[in-house]
Length: 148
Image 1 (tube, rainbow, N blue to C red):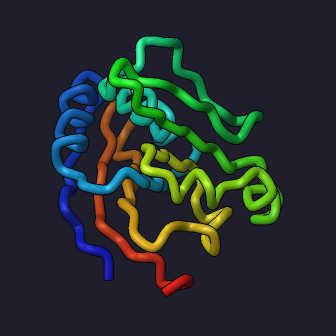
Image 2: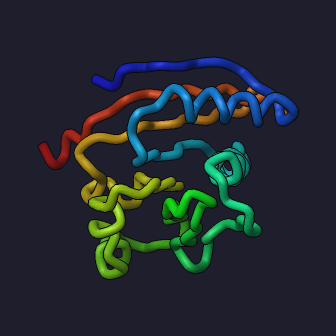
């Protein structure tokens, strides 16, 4: 059963502080993002990558499936977007297991599309629209029941 470690509402203006809180709170670099299209998954990931020390332009990997960034401290950060894949085989073919076995940060949008390939332990971030300006974020420590 996933353990909820944070649940709160925030606005776009409060997002940098929310992301700082997330970084301080979590102890796992494999982070799965859940939420409807337009809920703010990519926006939060961009802010996470920025706060982890990446100076380059950060964009969504919607068509490339993965973007790789290097922080000022030479730490590699991967951002995955599996929205467009048709089956898990596409993620497997791109070497998702190698990415997930690495010590690097891995931010994964649309993880339901690769649920059988997920790591044993990860953090779930669920984002829900409260209204046009406010989101509800729920953060949970989880374990993959399909591979244990």
